[in-house]
Image 1 (cartoon, rainbow, N blue to C red):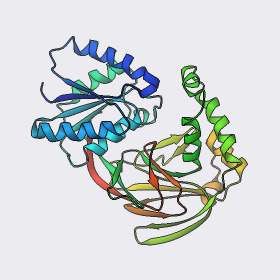
Image 2 (image 1 turned 30 degrees about the vertical axis):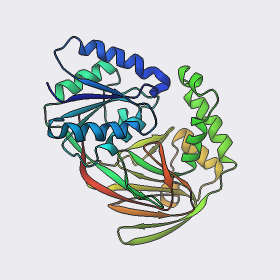
Image 3 (image 1 turned 90 degrees about the vertical axis):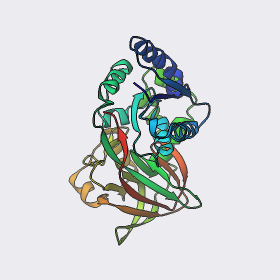
Image 4 (image 1 turned 180 degrees about the vertical axis):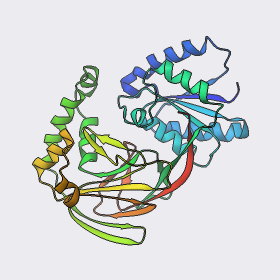
Length: 309
């Protein structure tokens, strides 16, 4: 079997990716499969490695398997954005499980590897990706899961900087850490006004807490976002949450409470093929990674990524 490459992020999951890779390597040694490995050395390196491997190998490259977190596969997808015949396998070694859950991938690394090896020569699933153009950026960025702007981004930044993050994750106390960061941010954060231009229509919102453009269903803590999104239909799903009180935001984030009135008056959702968000210069995140500041334009690239699942 030729053309099998692994890109490994050794710091994913606070270093647990190395333990996961040892299990994968042990499983590979039982087979006659030849492979090559590359380890990332800095943020953004997976994108560079994926692009270099695809360029050097040219038509011989069949599969790249990512061993890392959601940020690692985000980088690889961007590195392979112009190489549409390369199949991507994902073995989750990060702390988050959103993408693994959304793609219905095995959670155990050896089972995930076996599944990839069994399916890599079959017809794989082609997924749409979102393409982003940020103000002041000369090149576009792609995402597989979602783009996010608003209070959820600020909370995630607080979680990333949390002093005891590694210990909390080790003790499976992520929810407790989330509550601390939520309360810290919530009573300082000021909702903003937002103009949304999509598929020829312009809508204005006041008191906007967060905006997402989704290619896959996902969660922010307990809150489910874009539950009916289909990553193969050539559409993205926008969600704008606005006009809620701070206490209502707590109920939404911690318990996924969405009353009929909230859905009608404060949670706006709609499909689109392209959308532009005009607001302040808020940070913009894609697949959990900071990519720039707004305003931001997003469009869908149909069937641009081939995933093994």
